[in-house]
Length: 247
Image (cartoon, rainbow, N blue to C red):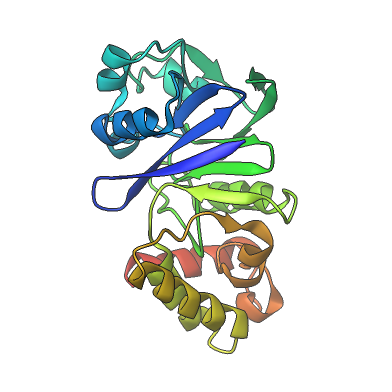
């Protein structure tokens, strides 16, 4: 499976997923950058996968529907029920699986950022939208802190070799915040230096890898004794997320 990051807007990522000649796009906030990417890759786009309904993840749907032979617009059951994704054809729930180019794509419901947030997991790749970022997580808009912490707990149980493809290029700022939570964590400092160098070279910090996230991401480490500082897991997560909101 090949994954091609497509920068959109100021810091969003869409992703072209190619498997055995089939191509899908994850979270296209804009149409034109995606159209240029599929033209360069010489593939035909037939599917759109949406992790949630926010405008900066779905804004390119109409343009792609006009230009490409789209067969499936896949999003969550919740977003379908509430008519939050235009042109949605497939409504997905936790544990659902569909086939794409001969590969299985598994669906995980991960509410918190929004109530309809889902992740797509396929061939060792996790498309997490705005729930899990490299070294960070999304704001809790529609769900609760407990809901978001449980969603992140589900994601961190995936195989450590899982490649993380997230919705935004927030990595450097996230790692700077992570240093305030664990100033003595050498892995955080190492990851920050690498991320700064990567961005200065004009490159993407995606994908991340889950095993490194388990060592550096405070939102996956919220119940580690060194991070929780005696608080229960939800209280610890809440404190970290609240601090990040004003960082």
